[in-house]
Structures are given as structure tokens and as C-alpha cells.
Image 1 (spheres, rainbow over the protein chains, first blue to last red):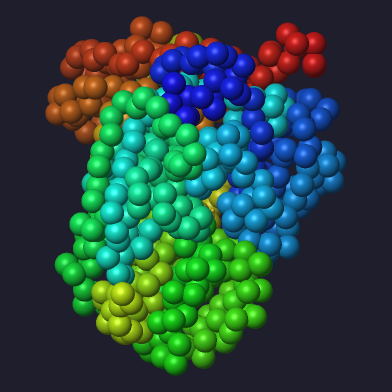
Image 2: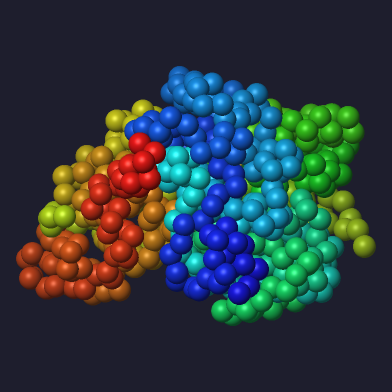
Length: 401
Length: 172
Ligand code: SF4
């Protein structure tokens, strides 16, 4: 068995598990947010059990519409508050941050655990050696009642990345490159492990960026090798040389439409966004602030900075980053999802072109369905914001190294 | 489970969940979701055109992207009887089955499409895993549903199945 199969076996009380086998697996944590939680709550009430399986293991984070973006969203927040009052499950309801970042900051990612989340980017947990299963609201309701989930053991694929990254190439470029190579349907219903010297050498923040976008290849489970035990047998292994990677962007309108920045540079932009569960961490803010320090965002560009958590925002304030952003002309919002999913805090009109550190650029993802969204690293986004058009890292300030 | 009969709406590959149901609509009351079903797709007025029992026939990766259950709920409440595609995003497929909307993989989508005309009606037989074009009477094989999936659909969705499980355990 490989490392993923071992975790599944342990949590289903089996000595061995085989690919394709259907099992009931014990769940260590269930998470949801303000736009998936309400239906889960409603479905849970239909089941009619008196309690959630373990109130310490059910967590809600209000992050998508915070503060509430409409009367309807306020109704959703109230439904979750009421549920948590009644069943005693935990709620983060004061803009503490994006769900996947909060689960990390609260130390709820435990290696070898199984997490079920009513959010597709629950795979971010893979950065910490957690097997994360993204589900919809009804399945979440079932797990809240039963404490287990039915799943089939997937085939596992290994992506090894070895060697040194060139200056200007970041974790975001790695994962975008891989999505571009395998396509948005590359690993539907499969488990994917990232390993190799490049991956093992990354910081946790960077591992989260990579794990976060594994769902963009359709993966059922995304997992980052923790470098502590044998990976074991996989269906197939792919090897990538880190020194071959260059700064890239996912072009409109698919995370799989990936091109080198050198091919698209010069494309005018009206909006630049730094944030989200993909790239809204302190290290991302730091990279952007180094570019924006003493510079102005181009006058044709709205720049929106969305810290992924309150802790990150606190640190940005302490270290003077918020001031650098404001002085450059950027808007710094409260922690949360911001405009990432197209409900508020910076929506685009038909003619707009945005560059963003978020994870999806589907038609309509950030407003009008004809608006164009490019996905790139915080460095590329910050440099492009200053220039007013898409540009390579190293244009505004020199590349280090 | 009876057969599903209706007009087919043809869609291409990678119809993501934002096209099926936009992000802002995730806060809509459930009864309003059908009004925006597929409004971000190449059939933006789908909600006005669809009739009860109609079928969606799509290519690869239908429903890729977000975990929003509002997407299959919107399709089902708009009247969609079944979705047939070359492949599905995993979470969408699960969500649809969990709420009792049949979604079935078919390897003959290209053939179905090339042999059909606009406004053709189809008949989907889930028990025997076939789809028939009612005008041409051409019959195509669907991938069979897994046992768990059939169980869920037969129970009328996952909630009923969970209730049955809890009753068995004496917890309800
Ligand atoms: S930041 Fe974006 S991708 Fe992440 S949880 Fe929020 S809406 Fe989803």
C-alpha cells in the first residue's frame, strides 16, 4: 500500500485496502463555510438525529460573504449561528479568515487524518499530510450525522519535481505548469502526490499553494509528501525538472490554459487581486509589498489585497505592509474570500481584464462572464499592477539571486 | 426508477460550476436557484427553455470546479431529468446523485450528437443503462451506475439512505 492507502486503511480499520474497493472511513474533522453550510444544516435537520457525531470535530467558518454581501447572505450566516448554538459546533464568524487558512492556524491539520470539507479547496490540507475529501452540502450533512464517509480507494499518481527553481518562479508557477500539462480533467477521481527535492524543500505556505490547486486537475485527493516515510507503490510517476519552469499564467478562461508570461506580456489589465486560500498568506503579501514599496499602482488598475486571515493582516500591519499597499493606491480589505468567487468586493464588467493570485478563472468567476481573468503568482500580479499590463517578474524590481 | 423522457440540450466540454450556477447565487433561497441555472453557459436562457424531464448531453468534465451543491439543485429544480456526459467533475457527480439527480457517463457522446438534430427527444433508461433518440430510434449504451450510486438514487437521495442506516443502528 502507498501512503494514501495506508491512511485510508487505518481509518477504515482494515489491514489492507485495494484500488476500487468501497469503504466507510472514519472522519477526523468536518468543515464548511457560509455558502455551503446552510444547505448542510438544512439537510442535517432532515436526517433527524439529535446530535452531530462529535461537536469538537465540526467547524464552520464564515468567509465567503463577510461582512454579508446581501440580505440573503445574512440569512445564511444566521442559519449557521443558530445551528452552532444548538449543536455546540465551533464557528469562526468574525472575519478570522478563509476556511483553509483558519483550519491551519488553529492547528487542526494533523498528519494522517481524514478531513471532509464542503468546499472544493479542502485539498489544501494535503500540504500537511492530511487526506482531504471535498464534498457538497448533503454529503457533509451525512458525515455530521455518521462521523464517516463512504469512498472508493482511488488510483494514485506521483508527480516528482526535482532541482532548483529559477529566480521569479514560485510555487504558483509550479502548480499552474502542472495543471497546464495534465489538463483540468487530468486526474478525475484519482489521488495525486507531489514529491521530489523541490517540493520537499518548499515552505509550508508554498506547499499549501500547490495542494490548494490540485482540485483544478479534477483530483479526488491531493497530497504532499511529508518526506518521512516511503511513498510506496503508485500507478504512474511523472518527473519534472524545476529548472525548466518559468513564470506562467493561466489564461482566460480555464486554469488549464497555461502560458509563459513571455508569451502574453503586454496584455492590459484593469484589476489586480492578491489574496485567497491559494496566495493570501503573509509570505505572498511580503513578495507583493517588496514590489510595491515606494511605487504606485498604474492609474488604470484597481488593486485589491485580501489577507487570508486576521493573523496575517495583524502581521501585515505590524511590519508596515498595509501602509505600503495603501500608499501605492491598493485597497486592503478585511480577511476573507474577497472577490475570488464573484459575489462582492471587486467584481468585473464585461470589458475588464484582471490578473489575480486566486485559483479559478472560469467565465463569470469574478463578475461578468465575458470579463477575462489571468491567474498568476503574487510577484507577477504585483509587477503587472505597477505596469498596468501583464509583465514578467524582474520588470519593476530586479530578480534576486 | 422510471425512464426519463425529454428534449436534449447539447453542451460542450468543461462546463464548470460557475457556468451552471454563479457564485453570487449561492446565497439565493433554494426556490430561486432554478432561475439562474446554466445562465453562465452557452445557453444563458436555459431556465426559460427547459421543461420537466429534459436531458443535458455534454462532453468531458461536466460540473468541474466548486463543491456548490446549488449547481445540481438548480438543474434538478429547473426540471432537468438527467445529465449524460463523457465525464463529470467528481464533487458535482456525487452532489447530483446525493440529491437524486441521475448523472451518467457515456462513451458515445460524439455519436449521439452527430446523429441528432435540434429539438430531438431522448429516452434514458437507468435500469438497463441506455439512451435512445426517439426520432431515429438509435439506442446508445451508458456506463452502468455503481451499486452504491443505484442505492442512493433508489432511496431518493443520500439523506434517506443515511436515515435508513441510522434506523438499522437503532440511532433513530
Ligand atoms: S478564497 Fe476563493 S477558492 Fe478559497 S475558499 Fe474562498 S472562494 Fe473558495
